Length: 464
Image 1 (cartoon, rainbow, N blue to C red):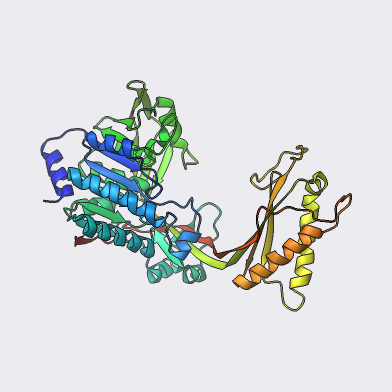
Image 2 (image 1 turned 60 degrees about the horizontal axis):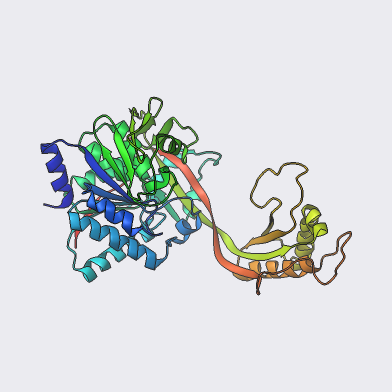
């Protein structure tokens, strides 16, 4: 019998609290060994790892590449795989390869298979793809079963056809199905982080509200602690609540720090929406067990009457080149808002002399308005600023032409009060203009309304 079958049978026969180890906030960026080993010593019933996020932007989804380095990804996968096999417990990985599309999932599986061969490991592995069938999605668009999230416009058939990759974010159901198939390892494409950790407890009949609330916290490892960090965290769940404990002795899970984590990635601190329902935290309670542990209770679950799957898709919009420079001239800095658009006009008139304007050129002045969207009025100017010019054009050559021209005329553009004609800006290195490759945007960030949210995610099993 494989790990999931053994754990399910044991706890169903002898009901007891469930121990779940959140290995890392995002696998591939390093799993601190002391805390992870301390977690293994506590004999958890499963190890869970979230591996992806949209925080990294659309490019990795569009290109089908991992955001993490191959070396660190392999190191982390080997660590959690060997840890789970040493205890004969399930290892569950969600959002494989950073963005969870087929290319990311396959790259992750290739590493796992190679580790199994190299280390002489044998196990049953469930694989859950998350790519969205385009024909089905086109039909859903025509039927009006797709709605935008946030300020996204209505999804069009052209959006579907143009997207490089489209994934759906699976919930708990596909993970539960995989667990019931008697496997040792589950590797899924794009997934809700809660699905990774809520699947086992809900399959065992623990309250869904408590299970999902616990999952939402432990997927970030020790980020809910003081001080926050990425060390492994242990959750012990029973029918009335769960206790959180960082496996790093220097981190404390306090009632305040854990409650504050309810605001993480949420616009509403009392409601967390999932594919097949919503988590209600109105009556959640956070109590200190001791100086390092907190107990959480009170979360409730409400099944959805309109199940949805969040869709994510990225479309290539061109090739990107950037110019990096800085200035310590107070006159240049004070006039930068008026000066930079004038430079852009000079560049346009030069590079578009015999062709149409087929690119975008934007400036960000860090120190003035590079980070904040709304700068306080009458704010004192900084002593120096960093400037990044970004061009997106149809080709790499065109984008490079624009930023190289921009560099020259920004360097020598005249403005009132200028004291030196030798140069307005300084460069951190040469060349200061860099071609950074394809540029993508999130063209799909929508909800797909479906009657069966789990049917979109088939489970396949292989034996290594």
